[in-house]
Image 1 (cartoon, rainbow, N blue to C red):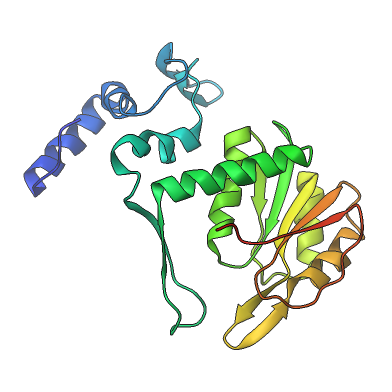
Image 2 (image 1 turned 90 degrees about the vertical axis):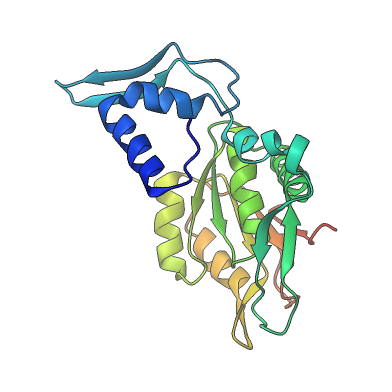
Length: 224
């Protein structure tokens, strides 16, 4: 695909996408890592209507987000995390560190019985572990439902039951300014009405004391 260095380049590439969409997107897709190359770029059934791109192709999105960059960009920053406290240091996470953490979370999920097709609810504050969790689910073929950590137990119940989630990833708490919010108690209220939940994995973030049910709740700390 042509490198865009000017407005004229942009217009040329844009026009190519309009005039020859299949060729354009096939050229874009050539940069991806495919486990199996596609058989057909586009299938378009006007009668249904139904559109399918890259029919027959197989890839893992996390290999394209992370793995393919390791050979040349392993030490380059992939994520910049700004903490709740503006006086605390920002966290710069490299592609290599991101890869390592995503693999750890993926293995943890598998150890807890999560497999391809299972649904995982993620109810966490804005921490890097949220990205690790989402990418880890994608890596092993699990479906993740991310729920904003400010939502109530009732809203959480609806989303867990609608998806039929097997496991929930959460945190002991979150910060809102200088205030600590107890997320675990919201989880406890919610999963009492969520029969599909088998396990709760609790990330230690604020250090607030929380209730833990043996055999169901598992506490994990931030990996170094």
